[in-house]
Image 1 (tube, helix red, strand yellow):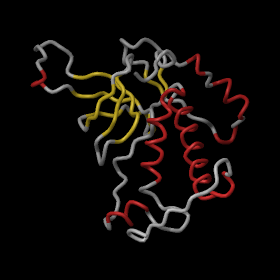
Image 2 (tube, helix red, strand yellow):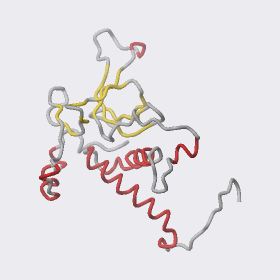
Image 3 (cartoon, one colour):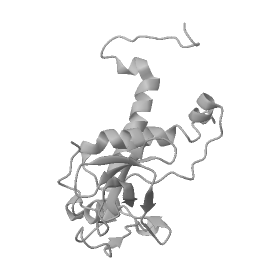
Length: 192
């Protein structure tokens, strides 16, 4: 036994005998499914969604009343930098990157994960290019995060917020209302 960690093996194809791991996988899967649905990204982005969900779960209280990251680092966690998965952003391009004077100084992107504190993994809008950045401005509307966009990518005025009215929530109506075919520019994308 090293570092008070003991490996316990289970027989193949007997998942009920490994209940703790199976429960954790189920929780991650539910979070991944919710993150992908809310973001409008296709299932091919499941890896980024799962990593993001696991990252967030490790810095919040768990069922035993502990924060896993605080147990590992002995440091209190600051969660003020957390952003909902799939949020729309604008990433700054530094002047030293070889841009000409009249070239764009930023690009539209979508948040697909975390690369540490205040460093985000973003996917460039309209492509599969993924970047790590901390120089980003998040698109907000009325205090809520934008996660669904309609219109042409060239226009920025079309950013709108889609929210659910809890009093009138109907799962069948919601599925039809948020049909993934209505989300422009996201459906054909898949990670490279």
